[in-house]
View 1 (tube, one colour):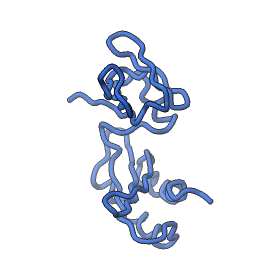
View 2: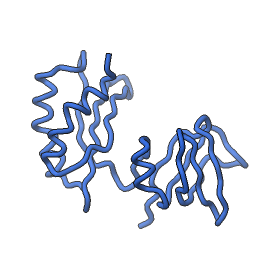
View 3: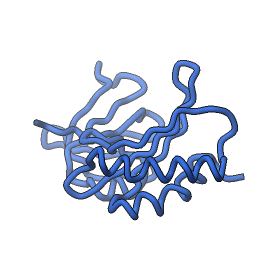
View 4: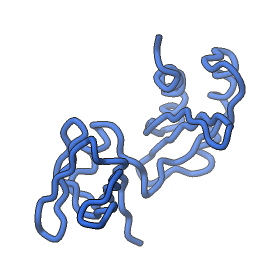
Length: 151
């Protein structure tokens, strides 16, 4: 049986693409006792509220029709954001050379957060350039990797 997020991604893709966007990620998570289905979209030049609406309205109807999720949930469509989480191989490939923040489950050298240039990603292992030196993190120690925008 397919995961909820995979099923929803397949349903969402035509609506996302017809709005001129790309599908960044799908989350189905429980927070404070409530279920949330979140669709994250991306577009060159940034995502507008109109882009989110153009996906949300028809996709909501399609989700009601297909009914891939038992029970109630809150449905949201939003931009992946400037500080987006990198999860998939294509995310890491697209942002290689960009500044990212790696958060660890446990502190290393008294720190849990490291910021540097993304050098490589292989099966969850991450290599950053931090202070001109390569720094490697194993998949098992990495809680999250996200873009680190500077404004």
